[in-house]
Image 1 (cartoon, rainbow, N blue to C red):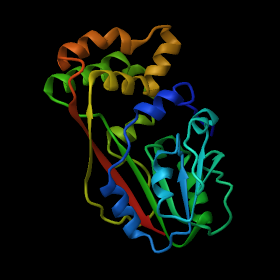
Image 2 (cartoon, one colour):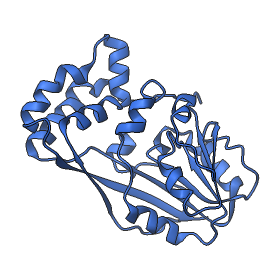
Image 3 (cartoon, rainbow, N blue to C red):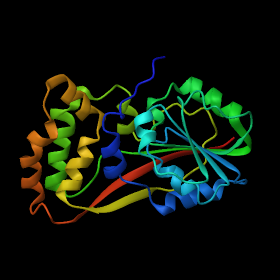
Image 4 (cartoon, rainbow, N blue to C red):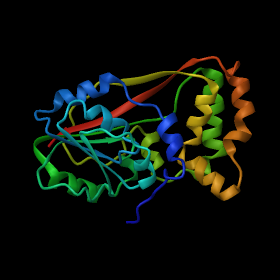
Amino acid sequence: MAHKDLFSQQAALYATFRPDYPASLYQFILGQCSQYQLAWDVGCGNGQAARVLAQHFERVWATDLSQAQLSVATAHQAITYHQAPAEQSGLGDHSADLIAVAQAAHWFDLAAFYTEVRRVAAPQAVLAIWGYGLARVNAPVDAAVGHFYHQIVGLYWDEERRHIEQAYQSLPFPFQEVPSPTFENIKPWNLHHLLQYLSTWSAVQKYKNAQGQDPVAAYAPVLQEAWGDPAQEIPVSWDIFLKLAKL
């Protein structure tokens, strides 16, 4: 299976304008772990999750297919960044106490990835896979963002995006799932932050490459009309969905 690198082109934007994850999510995941020697952050991007895990594990092995993403990752003495596909971690057998995947599992060759998970998982290891869908702001903004998502760049979403749209319920997960609470991420954003966030979408980059123009810039007046004062900060929220198993 060919690996898709959909985020190198916008790596710097991704590092600055993608939302992080709430403390409650990490607290739940960490509470399921029995050992804290090594965590593997798979599809780590710019190291957003790895930096949090490094506060709790002796070592974090953070891998991503994109060297451009890794090049903007924040260094930390406990984190080793390594360019590698999810299916070939570079870790030893039975070495990882936590295998964490943030907003990335839908891009993997899941059969091969799960084979690698079984190989590297230490006894009682935890596998935690999470993601989030469209942001929610208010009715006018949500309608404008939904139109942009479906009608403007809709043809440029990869087929794997359906797993996000279905909150990972369609994502194969051949393990006994631990029941998880719901989580919500809330950030106070202005219009500029929202526009830059939209620019990180893989479908936006594919649209730009195919059409030679920036759909976010073209659509910005519609979003501004829905938003109001561009400098006004409005709470933006995402529902986070989690699939977790003890291996």
